[in-house]
Amino acid sequence: NAGVTQTPKFRILKIGQSMTLQCAQDMNHNYMYWYRQDPGMGLKLIYYSVGAGITDKGEVPNGYNVSRSTTEDFPLRLELAAPSQTSVYFCASSVRGTGELFFGEGSRLTVL
Amino acid sequence: AQTVTQSQPEMSVQEAETVTLSCTYDTSESDYYLFWYKQPPSRQMILVIRQEAYKQQNATENRFSVNFQKAAKSFSLKISDSQLGDAAMYFCAYSSPQIQGAQKLVFGQGTRLTINP
Image (cartoon, rainbow over all chains, first blue to last red; front, side, top):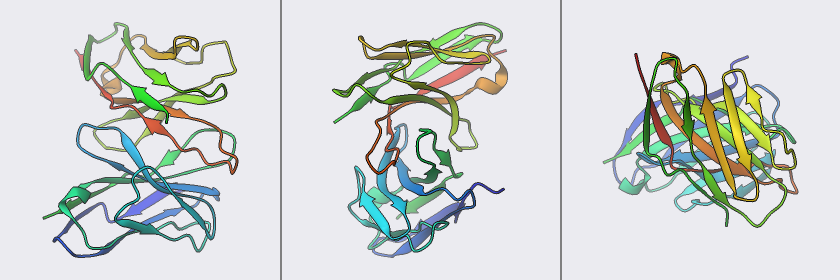
């Protein structure tokens, strides 16, 4: 099992560009999440999904969009990238009731 | 809204010694989970230990144990017999059960642990 896979691992964007961070899990987890981690800080929830076709906002959703067309995939879309979106992005998944999140290795995004 | 506070930005310990990392949280709920996650230089977040609030017994996982004080809203992590591989950022996190089952974790700011050989 690969667990949670994120691509790309590194990306540099120019201000105003758009991109999609890909996330896939092979554990058949219903729940998926996107977090961002700013330097020296903890993780903040951007968006989450409780199943295919169902998504909801987290603490810091502005500037991002998500979709969940399958159980396995949960892409995060950045529209009109801004320097404030420079961060490390983590995708995670979970099953109901355990409380444990399984994280990907993160994607480092720099907006210049 | 729930908050998690880690008041120790950095800690260091001699190899084989014991170290305790502090965490406090604020919530009005009675049912919740608390976690310690480890983030080594590779960046991937790894679950160290989990505590359910309804359980009075402190969780233990090999060399890792917690001191859960529900009334004081305190959740410290004790690492015994510290090893070089324990060097990492440690994050305390809180989650409350959601109706739909999602685990929306709230993280503290982290404590960077250094192990001195």
